[in-house]
Structures are given as structure tokens and as C-alpha cells.
Length: 271
Image 1 (spheres, rainbow, N blue to C red):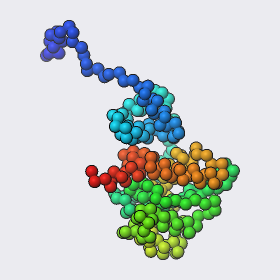
Image 2 (image 1 turned 60 degrees about the vertical axis):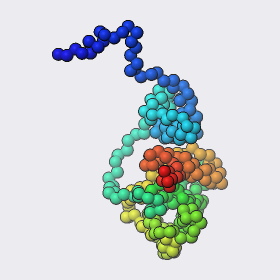
Image 3 (image 1 turned 135 degrees about the vertical axis):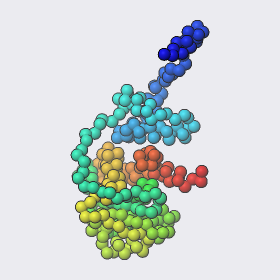
Image 4 (image 1 turned 180 degrees about the horizontal axis):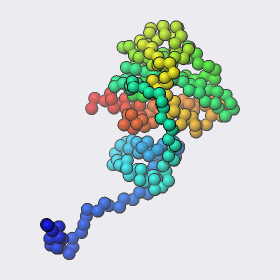
């Protein structure tokens, strides 16, 4: 049996030093940096913290940090989120695909509501691009969902994406559930006039609009649950900040942990 490794060791000079060992890294600066990043974002896990760190370091021209190192450092310093309990898998199946490969091909819409500290309800409706995940428009009210609210969100989305134009450049699918405000005749007629093609999910199939449902969970978990909302006026102001933060800074797993607008900028970049 060969013993070449023993022969090599026997011929090494006395001053030989094994430099193959992993260097010991100073984690203190990284811990401080991570604590500052997640101080105002208590629901962010290690992957989103890593995405924020990557963005900051890219802007400063500093070297990136491996996501595994971020996990190790956050775990050893008690910065990880608590593991969420597993829920029973849904018995409802959805074999289709909501996401699309290019922006302005399909938009989805849904609504959610929450109560302010004074008990006032606030109902929110939004339009989301099924490729880049940007919320192009939204509206909120203390009353109920109406067709006027849907049409306002539709038109604002068109104006946002097409530089103030009143009609889409090409037909865009508009995916929603079968709520009365979405399927009203006036809403369907209006949507077709501005270049939207209404598409509704099957009855009792919320997973068919899963992207909008997922966005609702994100908003409630990462923003609504901890933002100040003593009354409807304050909640509206903070909701506007939340939507802007989501579009500009929120790392999205489907976008390789880039924010929606960061993803769009890179997609539209010639390089």
C-alpha cells in the first residue's frame, strides 16, 4: 500500500507552515452591520438580511459576504427568527402557473383589510405585476370594496406603467377573484377600454390567484403587523411608506432576493 503522504511529510523543512487552514474571521463588524440592517425589520430572516447586506456592499464597492456566513453569524448571536410551526398542507390543488416571464403581460389584483387601534377598519386593494412583483397602484377605504375602487386601481396601474397613458400598449391579462366589484359590467367594460383582459379564478379556488394571496401575507407580516396604526389617517400614511418600501427595497425570493424595482432596472439595463 502506498505511503506517499508519509514520504512527503518526512521531507518537509522545519520551517514549513500549513496554510490550508481556514483563516479566523472577525465577525464583530458584520454583527453590527446586520443588527443595523434588521433593527427596523423584525420579520426579516437571514436570507433577506443577506440581500440587504449584499445591496449595501455593492453600493459601497465592498466585498460580498456568503449567505452561509450570514446564517452562522446570525445564529450564534441570536438574530434568527423563531421557526414557524408547520401547517397541514392544503387539500386544494392548483396545477397552473400565475407567474409570467415578462413585465406587463399579466397583472393580478386582490384586497385585504385590517383594523386600526381605535377599531376602524381599513380595506386595501392593489394591482401587482406577475413578473416583477411591483405594486403599481393601490387604494384604501374605511368603507367597502366598490367597482369605482377597482377602476381607479386599474387606471392608476396603466398610468404608472405607461408614462401617464390612458391605455396599455398591448393587451394585459387582469387576474382577480370573482368579487362583485371585479365582475361588475361597468368594470369589465372599462377594463377592456384601457387594454386589460379580465380573467377570473375558478370559484372557491383562492390558490389560483396565489401571487396576490402571497403578497397579502407579506404586507400583513412585514408591514401592517408592526407599523403604527392608531387611526385610519395614520395607517394610510404608513401604508404609503410600506408600499414604497416594498417596491424599492423589499428582497423577493423569486427575484433572486432583489426588490421589484431593482429587478426591473436590471431587466431594462442594456448590460
